[in-house]
Image (cartoon, rainbow, N blue to C red; front, side, top):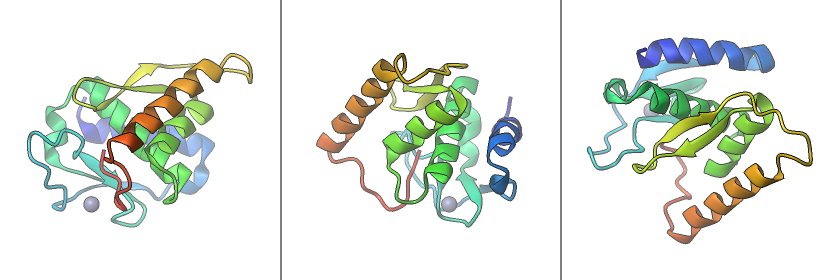
Length: 149
Ligand SMILES: [Zn+2]
């Protein structure tokens, strides 16, 4: 499935829970200029208002990566501009029961659907995400104003 079709599908699920996100669109962005080694530079948010920006190179990704990245970007929108990378993923887990994971290129993919944990059983998953957040902080790769990936 091409990224545009994934966007339509996922946005439908997002808008069912967050109707305010109906205006969000999927736009091609020339400012995503990461090289081939910059695997996280396929989409970003908080650049064009009410939009997830993408580069056409995203078409080369696997369905699992496209889906994972799009959920992550919607997570950024829901978490807000003050949220970090971890907040984006935690938001998607808590609101949609979708756990995002990272492959060896540090690209998101959907690890599991339909996790709707109660307060007790979700603690292990959330701990994992918090650990991931600490790892990211320690190598100094976070903190960009524009979130890429
Ligand atoms: Zn952009």
